[in-house]
Image (cartoon, rainbow, N blue to C red):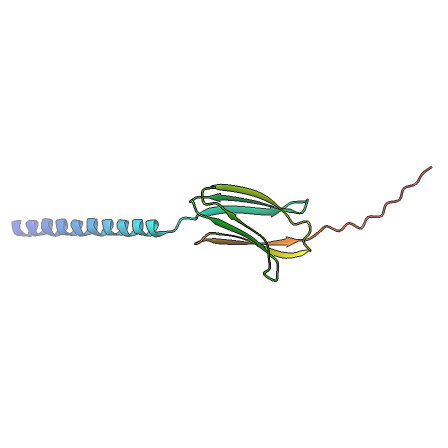
Length: 135
């Protein structure tokens, strides 16, 4: 009976060692997965204003050059700019008043990341008839 008790304690000790070892392995594999995930290098927002301009804001999380390109539907480049790698935030107002109505693409990219925003430019057409009467 004493031998059985010692054997049971030995089996339990060995089993607990395996459980602890497998837990630490899974924790290590999870930490590797988190570490290998790439961080986003920039955040961007863009919208069209009433006065026919595109307001663009870029906030960088790493010192990288950022390329801004506005393209027409036929892929022709209408506007391009490069943000210096040391400038961590950027804001611009791009005048698109002379562009025709249609769909355009605004691309903001780095060497590894790329964001493409589709912009639909449509001028508001007002057909208003005014009558002035003088009494």
